[in-house]
Amino acid sequence: MPLILGFALLSGCGKKGALVPPEALAPAPVSDLAIAQKGARFEVTWSAPSREEGGAPLRDLAGFLLFRRTLLPPAEDCEECPGAYSQLARIDLDFPQGVRRIGNRLLVDDYTPKKGKSYQYKVRAFTTGGARSRDSNLARRAAVTPPLPPVVEALSSATGVVLAFVAPPPEEGSLIGYNIYRSRLSASAEATADTSSSAKATADTSSSAEATADLTLSPLNAAPVTGTTYEDKEILVGERYSYTVTSLAAVNGETVQSAPSNPAEGGILERD
Image (cartoon, rainbow, N blue to C red; front, side, top):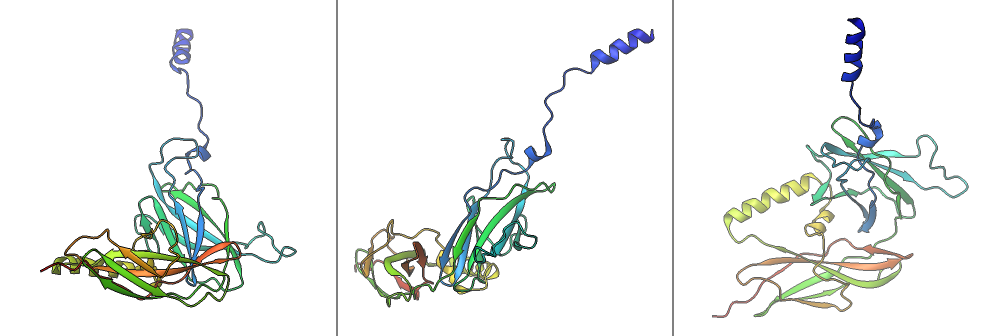
């Protein structure tokens, strides 16, 4: 009888699947970390991973840890030394603060870079269970003097809005052109209330008015505008729009964007 029982136990064990190492359950590392200089700030952006390290869908992404280090002269620089990186931000997706999210893209503003210094960033994702991804790709940037923002005027017409703008030559580098940003203004008291709430939320997640340049992440123009006028015809009759313009300069092989210009409003003039 004991022999029969032992055989039954052995046969009941069945064939087990392959063991999954714990690191395979961690989020896949971010691979598109990038930095852009906009005015005096750095805008750090990346996409949230959608899969685990092992390839399975990622279902419990909880947030990110953003790290930064200051680059030293080559003879002194040591990326692997203890304390080389400091944590710049912790982002909890359930209670996001100090971060903007547009679709799957996350944007964090760093207002502390100093002109003449170079910085390197990396980010790690973490899950609700505490599993952390490997380091992302490394992104580095040197802080330079940004171009000054343009001064903008808007002229409404029967076909659209014509913008005229002018900016002084950049202190560093050479002028590339301009980016045009547009947002639609509220047309009713209800919309005004919604906009006020949105503006408050924006103010809560940023310590500077510069962030308003990114109310629309992408400019209207596909390529930098090289002239000093721009006509926007892709607007609706009866609506009012606010425009801002930024200058773009090439500095040491990098594109640097100015802070946003003054806002200028306009819309299509309706015929009587």
